[in-house]
Image (cartoon, rainbow, N blue to C red; front, top):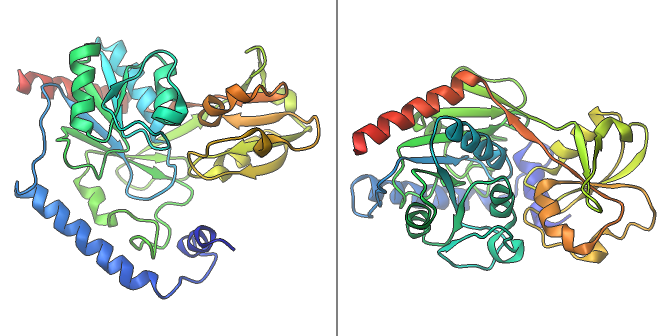
Amino acid sequence: MALADTLQAAWYGKGKRPWWTLPLAVLYGGVSRLRRTLYRHGWLRSERLSVPVIVIGNISVGGTGKTPLAMALAEALRRHGYRPGVVSRGYGGTEQGPLLLDELPDPARVGDEPCLIRASGTPVAVGRDRPAAAQLLIDDAGCDVVMADDGLQHYRLRRDIEICVIDGARRFGNGALLPAGPLREPVTRLAQTDFRVCNGGETQPGEVLMSLQGDMARSMADDHLQPLDAFRGRRVHAVAGIGHPQRFFDSLRARGLEVVEHPFPDHHAYRADDLAFGDSAPVLMTEKDAVKCRPLALPQGWVVPVRAVLPEAFLEEVCARVAKVRAAIG
């Protein structure tokens, strides 16, 4: 078993935790606390932008649904008359930035998630220097709200609103810090955030429920749509190179599909050999995977888009807080 699989099993109660992860977790926690303290007291500088900043992130590793949430919030902000943009590190890409994405960005260069968000019509800038990338959104794209995707631990960009996304199925695993557990920060960090959004599962007090819904499939050959239920009872290959592939596989099985699972690492760079399964069965994948697989020309490939469904009251409250921040900034 690979090290990553061993750790994942230990984090979520399916295996024994290696002894050496405990001292490393203590070290990791100490460094994290020191870093937060340095920013809190101003010994490390946070940069303030001239527009409201919303940070969307999580305290655990792996996919929790941050990107669909960012896309849903961008849509809500546009309905309220704002011009939102998203800043991202561009994980999985080679670009150091700062760079404002054009309409047809290369996922190998800028990362898969930024490409997915840009395809939804929201301006996106990537770069290791996130304040500089965010400034491009303001100066060159005319954005008046900046959202930071996966930026909860990036304290250099000062934030006005923090939203933590929680995996409703896996929650926080064994509750330990990396590498003994899946946490980037302790669970107590949740109390400092403005909103806690739970993706699926049962919510705890103070959490907002989010569900990811997708009932259609889009052909990668000609972009025509058909109901996902058209695949009911059929054998399909399911491809997922996301933080929590099992969520995608389970969602297809819930629709009655006979799923052959093909999990890949998060941000995986696909090659044709990865998707050569030796038969003509349909290949279904997430949108995040599809932005990288389109050049491979899969005649039997299908994309399963999902959208984040959230309480309208939550979206209204976020927009109201943005209005307050904007008024305070002047």
